[in-house]
Length: 164
Length: 160
Image (tube, rainbow over all chains, first blue to last red):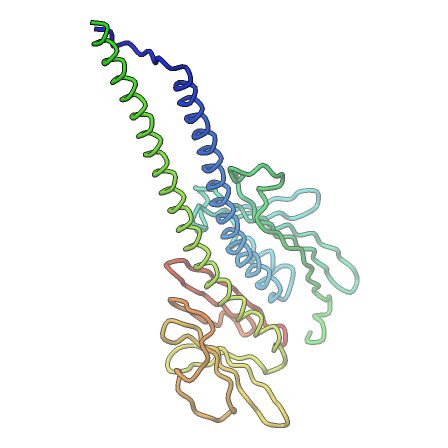
């Protein structure tokens, strides 16, 4: 009994090898496309949620009446804060489902404040950036950790403004 | 004996090719199924995203464009908070109500003193729940829930 694998026709073996190869290559390309599509959608969702979070924080800051109130709000609602080159940096973390969590750090929202004090008042430059801790897979562009970023300013007049 | 060997070899070759074909078919079905699942997920996420984003952006834009003194207020309408935008055209006072009713956000533009039914409004977008809360005099909180996803937006009214 000779049951060892030996195919008589070389053409047939070639055909099999080629068809398996073509199938493998097309399968890898398709899986890659699926991965890119999925993670592009996840990025779009993240951008929407991060946009709402950042806009909310910016709106709250805009509604406050003094720089001290801004720092008080940020100290209460953000997980950590530090000084970096004369700028105040506050940071809070979110898990995969965008629930605020200091344990499962999947996303970070970072707010940077720099003060320009003058006789007329205090101008605060505000930058809020949402970042993903690990880059999105299946994509090779640079700067992919950044999800959303907004720059703005808030002026607190020394005299309290027209209502002060 | 030689003939028997040829038969065995033929049958082994046939079975081998058939197994490879079967594997290719199974993997093809798995890839198509995976693609379908990914497409379904993308579609669901896109719809949820659309509902949440449209509802919050709509409210934000409406309030921003009407952010004048005493123009925007939050009042209770049939037991739930609604955004009310006061406007004057040709010295006549009108009100735009934005409220949650029957699984959707509705808008109703009417005379200031006219009574109306909640179902009279124009449907803006479907959401499972839409909450409107006053945090401070000039700070409002809006929360939209669609397919168990929740999105919140704070808005400060500059005219107050």
